[in-house]
Length: 304
Image (tube, rainbow, N blue to C red):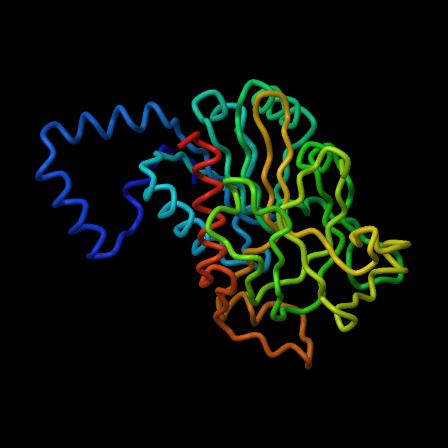
């Protein structure tokens, strides 16, 4: 459902509520100050959902949506919410930051043009996890589908190929000199889907996160659905998990991490006897490092 939702209305802990109350009580006119701060920082538009409409598409979008709204609330960023890109052109003019966590929905050619114009004018897009996917096509003789490369991959800057089963990943911080990776050490460990993504503009992309999954991270789709593994970097071992790229006066930041699912979603996934993933899975969302990345990216997006 589409609606204007103030991010501060996302569920908060008792501690947060108490702290907020104390601050408001001792600051005359705090409501006006907060309103001015929201105007200064600008709004965010959050898209979280699967395809077809109403489908989980293998992910707990409700959980991700609530966590993202909570993180926006921490920085007093008000937000509108949608399940797909159907009316994204309506919300871009009032937004400084676009956040997407999707499994299937993607912008069509006209929507991509509107998004590009918005980015060139100074908008910022924080794209997560399945945003690098999109439309998938059947391939004769194959059980899995192949991602169709569209205009939105060129705009985003990456194209999802596949991922092996969920596993522990040591994520290396390739660039610690930017505000997007502020507060992170040289590496951190998460449990997540090891994404294979193909960069679309490697020469103009600033790589933030990489990982070496090791020889056990293989996929039968390489050599069948996809002729070669174009997610590998020139060293033949590492893959990109996070990057940022400038577009005009704005830019895009993408992090491949962020899978989560519920027992019902887990039960609906294709059976794999080697898959021992918990029925309820939060993965990177329970990692301080991932949350730091998201907080940094929100600050980057709204100019905090």
